Length: 130
Image (cartoon, rainbow, N blue to C red; front, side):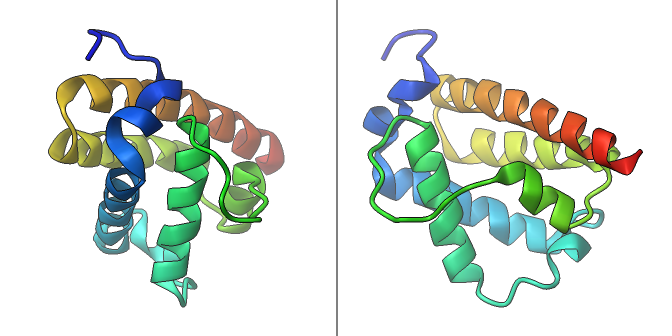
């Protein structure tokens, strides 16, 4: 594996099953998280959430679409009313989950992508607070 893999190659390196397992682990952790868990209290079907977000990441990491879902992370996080400052908690939890579940190079590549997304979401949330 290259020392600095592109995040668009991760679907090939990790495979669908691993990506879904990492996403599932993250949402298991988020349910118990002291600052983030409450924002997800309205989720009724955790398995569907994990499948949907697993598909989102599968596509984002370079895989081919296999569900018809439409994704708008900005709208979802606005709907959950997550304060912009909690994006740091989300990113720290995501980073720890990646580190615990993936080889270092893959975790680093995925985290770089997640960090960019987190910043876009933070900016969107800040703009909608005003």
